[in-house]
Image (cartoon, rainbow, N blue to C red; front, side, top):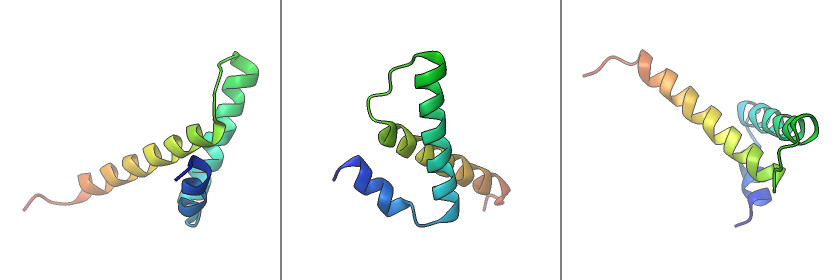
Length: 67
């Protein structure tokens, strides 16, 4: 499955959409202002979105008592 399709599937939730958009914006900034080559901005944004979801999960896990 290609990156764009995966991004479309995960684009449904507001948090995911916000993180994906932030990833695209960051990729564009890296390319234009810093000269960093980003091969596929959508793939970069998808990884950004996945990292944001992982960080949210980690914060949720911190709040749960250990049983």
